[in-house]
Image (cartoon, rainbow, N blue to C red):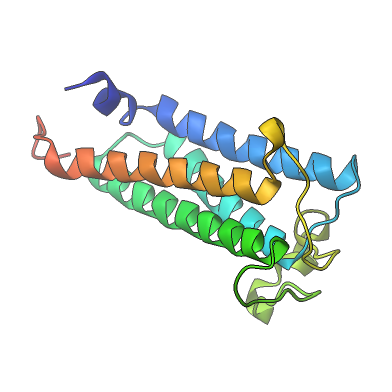
Length: 173
């Protein structure tokens, strides 16, 4: 078993994933509340995807690492990170005038999932889509999120592949 394979099967993988999601949320809230860059509808959609993979990772720290549970959780992480990448790409297109699309001043979720009303400090839309602020190395926030989402998709896909295709020591896994 390789070092990568062992690493993706430990609690440390899930702790690192949860820490990455938490860091992304802290950065978003810093830009919102300290620097005054209010979030748009698509930004909040991206936050929801970040919260999704962060919650999955947080809950995977707790149980014993069974193969089926890891596969299911990594599939959820892959879907959330793909959603994050798609929303960041859409936002990048909006801010650069590429493609068709628009942004609304409401979140657009169904009434049974009114997270903008339940947690407005985190999920309330406060701006229309226009541009995203510059981050490290001159990348926009949309570009940064596309890259981060793509890398996390690749990591989750690797973890899924390793669980599916590597031989396992126990039939109970």
